[in-house]
Length: 313
Ligand SMILES: [Zn+2]
Image 1 (cartoon, helix red, strand yellow):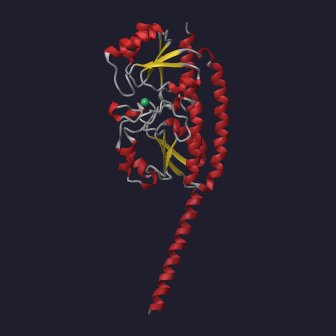
Image 2 (cartoon, rainbow, N blue to C red; image 1 turned 90 degrees about the vertical axis):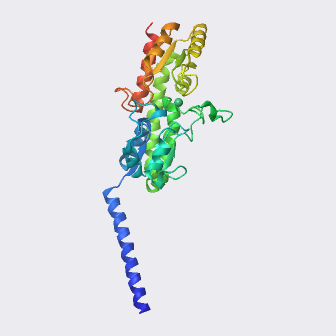
Image 3 (cartoon, rainbow, N blue to C red; image 1 turned 180 degrees about the vertical axis):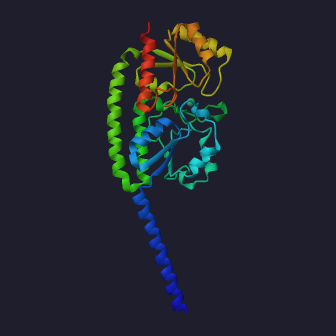
């Protein structure tokens, strides 16, 4: 009796093993893709370049939103529930929506510190890292400035983190990701060389932006980020702050006021007019304007729009 039972169990186990193998082979033949959810279109575009046919990528933000206030939809939790990996800027840029969505997704693969959680900031040289942690200030940048997606040099580091992360989740395709990474980095390097050449007239120009999100861009292209219309990241301006800002801008001959397209137009226009600076309206992500279809065309748009303002007389 015992002998028979054990034979039955063996057969059952064997059947399970065979079924599992068949399933794996079938998935292999069907070419099941790694399901990736990126928080912003910039990271989705780069993930597509590195993952190629091996990934199926979607983005939570469309590019017109404020990264610190992306509206949550139930469909995002469903998307994340099915995801193998999530790709994010990190540094708490997505704090307003991502932790809650990950919790609602009930997907253990994409929890922080799990292999499916790809934080693209790991190799980035982060600017404005606070010397002390003080959340009582209500600052939206507690880990340092997270807006490195406006700098193509920092996005090379993000691309490396994405290739690492995809390789961690699909080790059998690590070589493909590495090869695609190198191809994309070469493409970005060529574009960066071109942008740096084109951007020569921007050197030494001073800018004020609505939110402190132009720092990496300014650094890359030799500009100086003089100040912001917000008092601090996420802290709205007061009349006293604007008066002080305008005074400083006049004394220091600030050339440009950047209005990121998701911030109010009126105040930025008033500050520009009051100080004689040029108003420049820029998207903060891929998809923020129709011309910014992918990461390279996004940087193209920002460099050219800034140049037009500086050279426009
Ligand atoms: Zn910010």
